[in-house]
Image 1 (cartoon, rainbow, N blue to C red):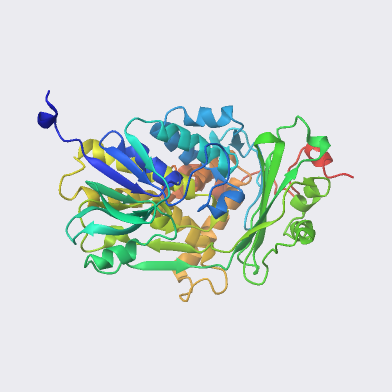
Image 2 (image 1 turned 90 degrees about the horizontal axis):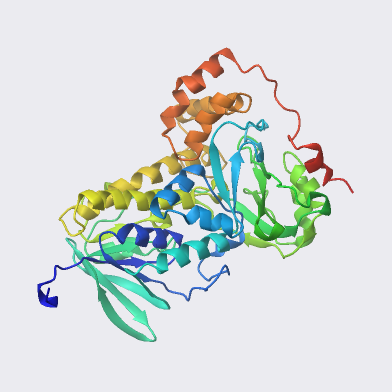
Length: 466
């Protein structure tokens, strides 16, 4: 067929080369030729990159995200594990103390598997896979300046590269530029009303250090170890130890206002020993530090309700942290990004990308996983002093008490734990907490007693001995 008679293939432009942007690009390849615009240069391998300050800290992908990744990019999880990532069973491969200070038993039958690795490794595997697609083009060292078009339709993006400005046109522009997104300003410049925003700031600071584990753990598939902060005992302090590729531990410690960790390497283990349970600090006593301490303070829960705007232009969608950023201790960011990209793909399988109203449908569909993660984060963080100007309502306090009881039940009953993890992993809605799998054990009571200490095996605990 002559070129001038060939059907027009839609074009999409993704602002941001993070995993959110790459997931979006993967979702769009079935409907459009995709250009990814990235402000910085991207590394070729599993190396740190600019624009991702959180890459130094502990990361995991909940089982809901693992399933989404396998649907979005089949074989990606296998690629990650082949390069050193781990699929860990929750709770069999995890030692976890809940916010209400209850230790979970290490039940083996829940079926939930979380992906654990460094952020650099995950980014490199996703980047290599997505950028190899023939319909994806990368423009590095290119900064998006503003949208082009009007309040009815976005037609592209004005960019700066090499000291020069020019316009990139597209049928759909996706903002995946993260917490620093300029979409509120861009939309206002087109004449659209301000988006409603909300912020819950627990004042969390988190600090991370990399370790070589003690020799006693050599060859041992060491569990994740997690001591969660208790909002009822401000300041909240918590920590997580993640065994990652190359035989390393990534240890992230966190504290809210008045209980923040510092960047002082000499204070790191002491802070860990001072958590509600000292198990992480005890494990670090015989571990070898391999890095300094990296500190991050931008951790507030932030949400922009684009899906509720009275008017929305065709040709524009916002995804990922540009819509909602969460307190990182919950580990939901990557899972939400993958699920949102899947939602985009499903809409475009039913609706042409260029059809009127498609962009609004994309925004509303992608908001569903955002809302699920938001409710989980805010339901916890709103109880920290100073987190919000509006104190939790009576209904929110009653729900929090119910969730505490659900956690206490799941800690001692595998059936209830499965229901709890379905919600925490973003695989099922919160209504799952009111299902028979939770209510029956809750009403009739688990027969197993509460654990009095971290459920480490003798060999795992042996690494704490000098």
